[in-house]
Image (tube, rainbow, N blue to C red; front, top):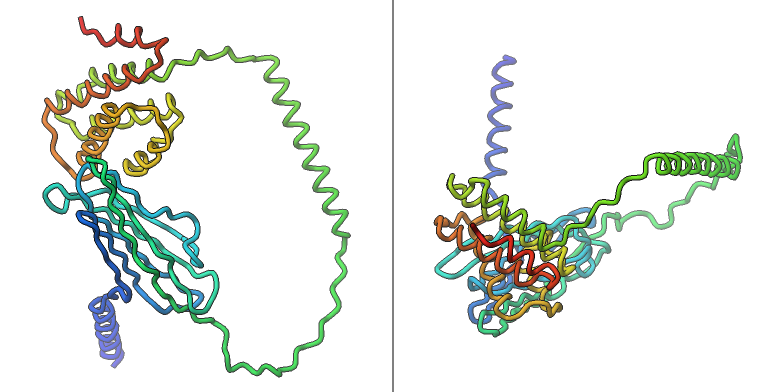
Length: 332
């Protein structure tokens, strides 16, 4: 009899598991708008939650290839919701000359009641200088309290009991802890001072950013990545060298930003000429397509990309080191 009962329980659990998979949650709130070639859509998985739940917010933008995209600036809070996590997928090709990027946010409510997600907007700057802007309206969200409204408001509370006396006064404990921390800090300071006096390190000469970048490019050219057909890894290295050079030379954050965020920040720094910006935009966007969208690259394109990086670095380096860099770029 027991095997039969166990078999029935197993079949019931399996059917429940299959039903839960077959009923996937559809977004309850969806908004979309477009401005010419720029399309922006936002969806939320739920419109009513409790104070202990979260909302999955999905943002998707379709824009022309080569345009500088400005996504919504999401910090630690969106309206009356706390941003618990966010993830942005790399750009991908969705049609001839069109890219798409997706961003997912997990939002937790800070208060209860009738709330709303504030209006979100994106913008894109095209190659000809035109700017496209799309803004969506706010999204209403109802957050229910976890407290039971039917609780007896007149219920008698228990009397407050007298606090227990600690065995040792708290002030004594804090004083002892402060004295211990001071003693440890004094010992660490004395130890470091004694080590610095006995073994003073030699000053390390600082290599100019342009010279360091050219040295890395020379090493990359001799690494064999181009000859072995590792074009994707070659573009990874070229992009890292160029971004590190720009960050060290011009104090513009470039290594931790996406290409769109980098060009948005570049708008406030008048350090590059228009031809230099065009060369930089063309290289970085093509590098993103090769690194993340699996776009193929020929050996000739890889060689031209390497020389473009070299020319950009030599041209924008400081005048005091420009002559040295030019001498190093001359091939025998």
